[in-house]
Image (cartoon, rainbow over all chains, first blue to last red; front, side, top):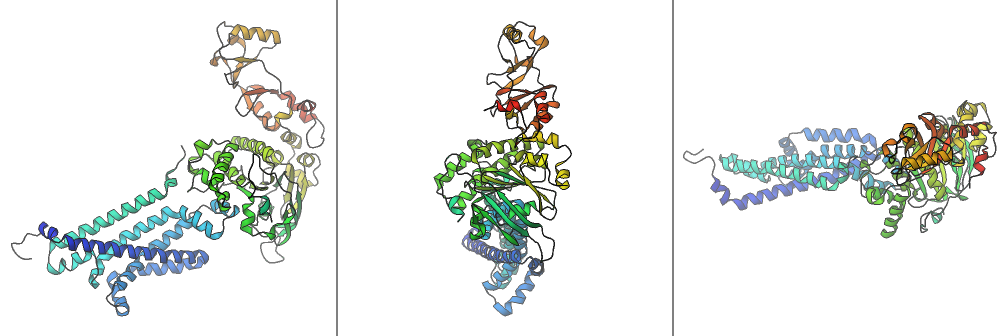
Amino acid sequence: MIAGRPILQPQWVLDNLDEIGRRLGEHVLMTVLAVTIGLVVSFGLALLIRAWPRLYGPVIGISGVIYSIPSLALFALLIPITGITLLTAEIALVGYTLLILVRNIITGLDGVPPEVIDAARGMGYSVSERLWRVELPIALPVIVAGIRGATVTTIGLVTVTSLIGMGGLGYLIVNTGIRRFFATSILTGVVLSVALAVVADLALLAVQHRLTPWARARAT
Amino acid sequence: MITEMAPGTPSTGAGQGGLAVALEHLTKRYGPPGTPPAVNDLSLEIPAGQVCVLVGPSGCGKTTTMKMINRLVEPTSGRVTIGGQDIMGVPAVELRRSIGYVIQQVGLFPHVTIGENVAVVPRLLRWPEPRIRDRVEELLELVGLEPGVYRDRYPAALSGGEQQRVGVARALAADPPVMLMDEPFGAVDPIRRDRLQNEFLRLQAKVRKTVVFVTHDVDEAIKMADRIAILQRGGILAQYDTPDHLLTHPASEFVERFVGADRGLKRLSLARVADLSLQEPLLAHVGEPIADVRARLNRAGTHFALLVDAADRPLGWLSGTSLDRNDAVAEEDAAPGSALLEPQSTLRDALSAMLGSSVQLGVVVDERDAVLGVISVDAISDVIRAPARGSRPDDPSADAEP
């Protein structure tokens, strides 16, 4: 640290609003991309598990193993294959969402009351009509809970991708922050990424609230 | 095609009635040949518009039998026809849309409103929106749920009894000729069950569907059925008969034991309060001068008057000291104590309600709770003593009824 320079320099933030905004946007984009792809992949896996329930153990096991690999190590594993690219970052980020998403989709679908399924079959729903119009809507609260968890986790992990030159707000923390002993940048990155996680979580909660008015209906 | 008789037709009032259902040598075996069958060479003819109750101990295959009619279970051999046509000639999904389905746990969809729950099958059949709206309205009224109050609520906000009424409305939505009901009133308490049974019988008198009704409760079977099929373990038909004939002429020891030793008493379940001629009680209205009531009692030579409110709903009996005053009759003067009965109540339920009350005269009320008349325990015991005859116990007073 250079003597005489204040630790925090609000002026730097004002001077660099463009750069900060760009990093924030990048961060949001990488998160949305990872969670969206993760959701599509998890949904596919969940459908496979429904068709062959014996896949549940292996799928959850493998997702769990991926989840437990330290992010740095995962990048190190991927770089020889996909290089220092956005693809590397996203493969890792998607990998981390799978455990939470697959588990919650399956738990949500398993939670649909058997009598509802019996009634739906008896009234003449085909298998896919039943899935889309009955089972998924009823499983939605549990699935959205999974999406919230995956999103918050991903927002945290995106910062780590700064180590391979991506990183969104992580760039502020690592590249302009830690490497240059510049506390203002570190703090800006940390505060914004925490704030982003909180805002995303609340926004998803609001979406869930809007989509599931029935979950709040109780006997009067 | 079974669909041509169900969905497409416009619904007018009571809609179309039922179609005959026939089970021909139905066998279901869960497992390779040689394993004991769940349903064994079962043949039944259910006439159009009748209620056929499948009853028997657990493991007798009654639910399996019912589920072979809408192909939730595929038979190992034998066939089912509806209106003379083999159900295997129609895709299963299409067949099910033309058959009403009511189950014990109701199975309403928790994520959509009551209105949308009722609209399920019409939507699957892609009815136009205005027609669905009208039909939902009509059905909610039919099952006694005010559409304005209930249509936009979610199932979680309803009581068990209300939910099952929605279940029945949902099953009737596309005006199917056949209804399958699997212990539909098994999950509600006995008092509400009795009400729901009465309501269903009233409804059935209007819609005249062919109903296959599964229960393990003999009393419910006797009350609901035009015909009862008693099944025994292994899915073997023990007897298929009218309730009265079943009680008076059980075909085997198994049937005799299954219907129980109190067969005479059970016959009371076959007659309804409406079958008796009701006595007219002396009515007094709230606000009437007591002196007038007294004068009428003296003229009639009795000591009791039934106090009713402005809508003729019974409040209780007036007698003794409450008649000695000279002001107007007040609500508080009435001593409650009579059982309230509906015309659809069976005599068995009526008797048990009357024996449990302090005044052994039952007050019969209509749908709006207005007094229709009273019946006595004596009138009921006359029915027990009467010899068997046709499908109704002999009761001279019943002949006087229209």
